Length: 367
Ligand code: UT7
Image 1 (cartoon, rainbow, N blue to C red):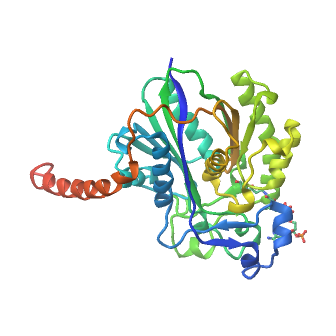
Image 2: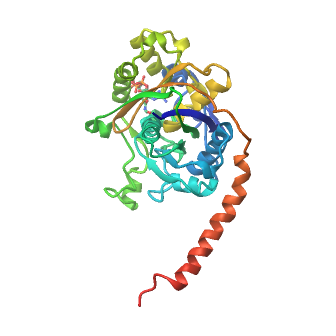
Image 3: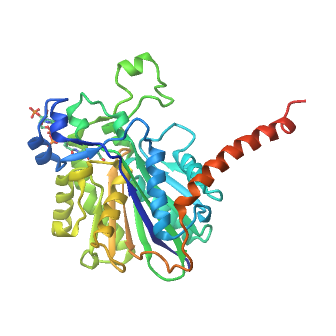
């Protein structure tokens, strides 16, 4: 029997910080309103030369370093993202190329802010089935590119960043214990970004109508979120045969402190059992759970052997929760330095293009 253990973790956020006071100079809002209604104080915003893939690469390399794995050891890369770099190729493939994960299959997963839970579950199931031995699961976002900076009901909420986990097979019990995934497409219109897809391909009209921005019915999403967070947590715990009391930490999607407080009330747990960092990053969508998790581990809050539940909700509508026993890195036989492989990856990528050009001269020509 194979278990899927979380053996590496990393996060990356862009340096520039946008505070509530900065926002109050852009739209009619103020620091007190934003803090009281959302719990957010500031968020990080990507520079022009930063993308979902570059943030994802930084987080992934840190996660590989903790797991002591080379990029070439990874069998599968799943990138959960709500702000992919392109419709295709997948951001996961861009990351695969930039880190030189030569053996890995790679794809993006679109389940909005629940995406990291979905992706972690998919990767864990692949490991448990025996089809792969290791996976890199990434949540990477530059949602700031899709925010309407004139819409005060959404522009205050979102931030950019990435988080990554390495999952590895082990015969020792632990790691991912259970997961539940849910959806309700009838609520798809409550939170959407419609422009640029096949229904509304980009043209002057779609740009004029603001279809390339995030649109949200905040109140409805809020009500939905407060309903499902506690419910999904309980379902995942039931599936793992655990009670709420046996769990040391809940790591919720960081969208709004009031939603997290409602989940705490629903689970009859004190807020001290919830990892919260929404104040410093805002809502980073798929990246919010891994970023919160990485900070909790680095602060020494989450320790080896702790039972944890990660729980999220988002556009779709989607929601889900995953229960795990936190393991930490597997024993190190000899140390590897994944970051050193970046230059090799760059050279390899150039070489692959040259190879394809040469191959094209001899093969695949129409007679
Ligand atoms: O990953 C999932 C992503 N989405 C979410 O998690 C969003 C969930 N929803 C929310 O977090 C909240 O609904 C919001 C933070 C978006 C809004 O908070 P709210 O307490 O639901 O406020 P509201 O929409 O009911 O608006 C209350 C008032 C309104 O004024 P009136 O109509 O009562 O005069 C808004 O126009 O607050 C006004 N308002 C603002 N005022 C100052 C809305 N946005 C702002 C703002 N600054 N930024």
